[in-house]
Image (tube, rainbow, N blue to C red; front, side, top):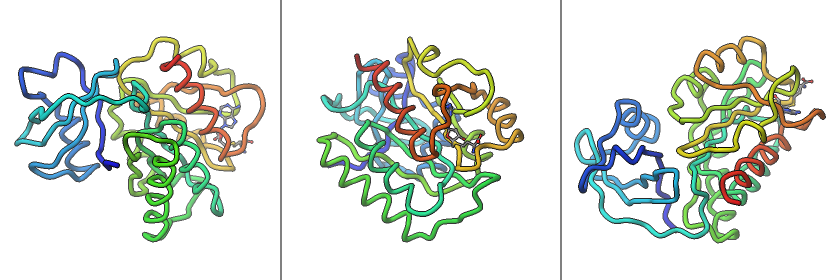
Length: 235
Ligand code: SAH
């Protein structure tokens, strides 16, 4: 099973056998995902078309179209504040089953835990096993932990949401009725986000959303969010 990274592109970026990458996409592929010249990745148009592509200078060469049956039509990135204990293992497993494309663990104001490199290896192994178990075509990318601020400001997704347990925000289900492209969704730690983090997220183009009237545990919220988004784009 291929461990290829995915990015969403607009159909207009595809020209003949080339993909014209935006500066943000170049940054994401080269700096965040650390892909070098000649390395391959998947470009998806968010409407169900996929291509295998290769980094070629500032842009990318299209190698071939891909046929995928078990992947969601949109690429979903989960930004998740690291929960205490081994809760993240379960989140990686469940969200992989639900179709997540990328998981970005973050250090937030209320989680100061900096995981060991062994943890990252373990999460990547769990993602690979879960992807195989649920017959996915691709293993989700698990990024190295970064600060919450870096994660939100580096996000280039066309739809950006942050789940907030308190406040009068629209329900996620009501804001994702017509999504195409890619989605990023952030869920907080046991102690919740700080006001400052919500403000930073809003400044980076994230919309605060609710997952219902009950307070969910930090490890439950991503599963609910992923289920709602996958249902909205797949059914
Ligand atoms: N202790 C906090 C709640 C934290 S719940 C408090 O009392 O306010 C952990 C995370 O799950 C939250 O930061 C949020 O991202 C998500 N979450 C839990 N319940 C939610 C809900 N009903 N709506 C939106 N997000 C929720």
